[in-house]
Length: 470
Picture 1: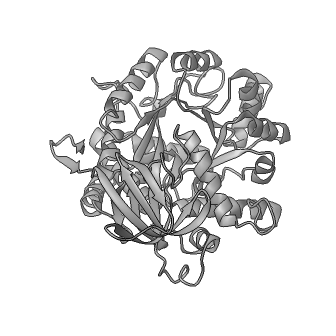
Picture 2: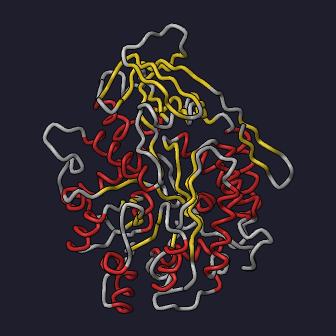
Picture 3: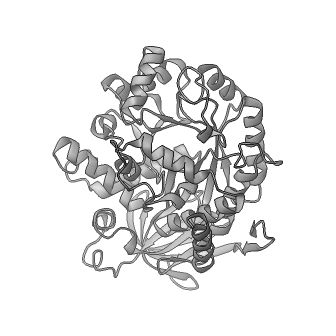
């Protein structure tokens, strides 16, 4: 049984079944597509898989089952400011002007607001085909910048939202100490982020306690960026937390690259690869602006490139060099980042489309003749996303979590095709409109495309936003 506790004393309770026995009409297994797949799951885990199984005594899941996709990068509170930065300013708008809108918005959020917005965003993730999320959580302190009595109170708000919605959480408390490269002092808009190493490690410990009641939660660390964490502080936090995921923003903006070169004489990804132990623990978020040597180096490191194509397009960041990176064996996953439009298929499609625009060619993520681009995108993001979240790769196989997205085989875009064409249609045509059910840990959380707690979560979110935007 999972519970979400709200500050007003109300609780949302979710009852988790001990055992479910499904029969899936169609499913994507590690060996390929199969029909009449019997799956037993218990304690959130798949215990048995049998293609061409008997339907007798089993719960039919009509449609096309694929493993649930991980969302490797999210700032859930930013869902509440979606659309607020789309008015042209007096000068050239950029990431840096968008950031000022973000600072103003987050300056007024209470713990209840954070939980309300996070619940709404996580609900939309589930409805959009994501079954797990890595929350890059950097909003730590009260509105005046002072720590809460419980320094990890807002981490608790995120954990409570995950408990209410049923999404699988990797919580990444963010270490943010400086306002720019070389230890520049933070400014007023960053007051809710800032910690020294002692305070930060208390937040990490608080995050572990806040997630204890959740199903299969993971806690990692997130040094925000090279502009926000000094080399000494980066070394110190890595030594203090030697295990689990490490996520870091890097090379998102051209100005960031220029400032890093001015500070260190090196581009940011090159600096990391030379000075930090970048390996399979790491996820470098964005990594948009890399030269050829950095692209090869990151692909060889074992780390994951955390791509957020919709947000990167919205902010005008630039285009990741996906073709060279993938051809060199690089690993990737996708995230919803600022949560302006949440959908697993949409992020995958945007990634492929940015490569087509950059190279003026088509089907670029697929590596060989005859390969489905939709499946190449999906399976690549499954593997890289799971690694970035500190989890076993998502697959419908014994020992994996029973997390699956069910596509409606009767959907007009899917009804006349089969096999890999289902994924091509889902990714490039129908998107989340084709999602009929979502099952997380063997528990159905979305039916007919709607989250089971949608009414309550949406009503609370609407009330919250009406007050914040009044």
